[in-house]
Length: 225
Image 1 (cartoon, helix red, strand yellow):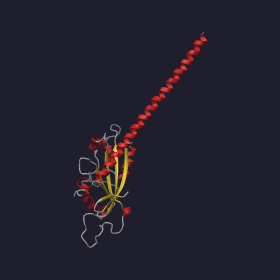
Image 2 (cartoon, helix red, strand yellow):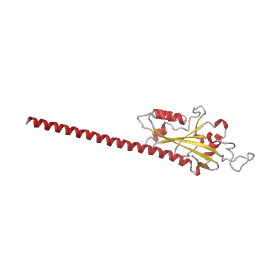
Image 3 (cartoon, rainbow, N blue to C red):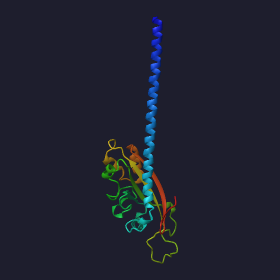
Image 4 (cartoon, helix red, strand yellow):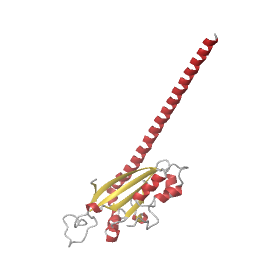
């Protein structure tokens, strides 16, 4: 009788252990599934934010704003500026490009202005939706002789405001985890060049993604890559 009771107890313990193991596995699987779904949602949101910036830049109405692309053309027409990066913090409720608010990274990778980049208040305001900062630079790999001269215009004619140039636009969209990173430290990362900003955000474990596009500007903005 005691042997039967002991055997029964062992069976019950083994079954209980198996149930516990299966339960733990099920819980872990559910947790991993939820985590993967959440991560997928986060990166989808980041891509959507980056796309929103590029779509806004391609809006034909922006090309006719005197303080928008015309200011970018004028800035890069100065030979001393061709290796610079222009920084803008995207705000869907305002003009996408405002040259009066742009930041400038010089050829040495240093911020030469104290505006343009997304600051701590932007990070806090957009902590749940994510925020985007974009960089505009002249694409020197595609420069050709007389590239700045529009078609059907000789060099002796007055130069029209629509310059035929290629620009590389880099969008960095981030979704900061407030409480894990400080607002000031994230803003400090965003004051750097596009490459250094990515390195800084990675080191801080900030969730972000990067999209790049190349545009040709000759009377109208056209995406070519």
